[in-house]
Figure 1 (cartoon, rainbow, N blue to C red):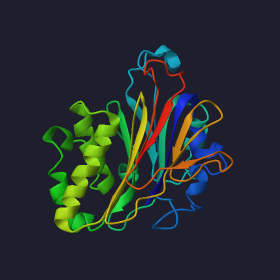
Figure 2 (spheres, rainbow, N blue to C red):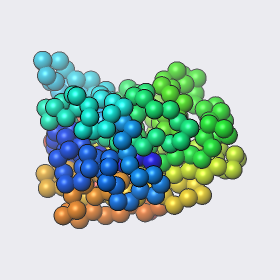
Figure 3 (cartoon, helix red, strand yellow):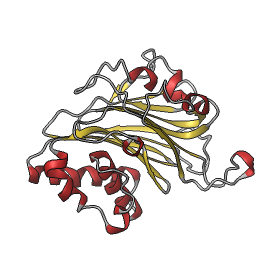
Length: 274
């Protein structure tokens, strides 16, 4: 199991979700309150962000909207570079996670998410039972040949993300891509008699969508909340308990998108659907 967090809104530091809030991922790595399995999340830290297309990045380089990422096998307080970088890098879309390794899935930076592909980033909070013994081969067969080469490590999270990549490249919206990836995974789990929790978050330069899916188990905790700086926060647990966080129900989804994708300073719109 993992803890995930995202923010969409006027540009903010990456540290907003990693370190700055009372219960940012730095805290949720060791003191989660709502994990349904496991106790701590110290097997890796990752963050993905975007410079909007056409924006001038540091050094005068024009950004192309592709997903940028930093992934480490260390917890958020142990990496030598992450804390310093996260206070100097800003983005209008941030997606981050701290990882708890599922038994049977290897450790290492290659298995830490968010994963990225082109202008898409994704992270998964959950696990698939008997993944390596029964589910991996039929589920990996669902991934297209063109995308299969992007597999960095045989994990349920990586394969789930690649299914979303396939759907997104075929023209699906973030919401449609997340739903297609979880639907196909559930179909394979049903055939193999496996259970799964599949809280899948996808991000691109327009915003973030999280689908809170599950099969044969209760879905993971998930919340969303407008923040004080005009943005929308989404997280496994409230990052600032003083704010009014709304739970996302089992099988539901939360969307936080900029109304004008080319204007990163615009206030995003949030929608929670059952």
